[in-house]
Length: 118
Image 1 (cartoon, helix red, strand yellow):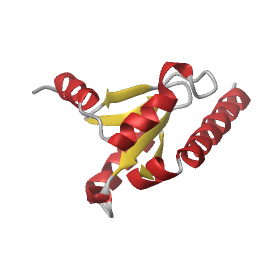
Image 2 (cartoon, rainbow, N blue to C red):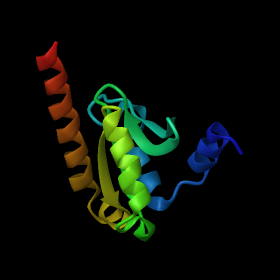
Image 3 (cartoon, helix red, strand yellow):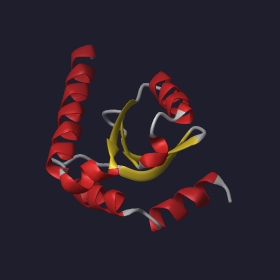
């Protein structure tokens, strides 16, 4: 299975936390911001990405606890200019409003930086 096929498989088999987050991020629902889900980026597939602000949102389960591969992945994504926001699945399921607020604030902060640099 190539990367595009695997990304499609992930989109079709999202976990509950990803489904809930996608409900709020899809179709420009977060203050008109466009997100993509299960998006290939270099050698990785990220859960959600907003390309305009270069913000990635990851929904993590227990397998991500102190993961060395996640640290390498985040370092590579950071080197490409992305900010990675990680949330535990239980945080998304129990406090989705807080999670969305953190995402929104980061989008606004990064867009403000991009405007200031122009």
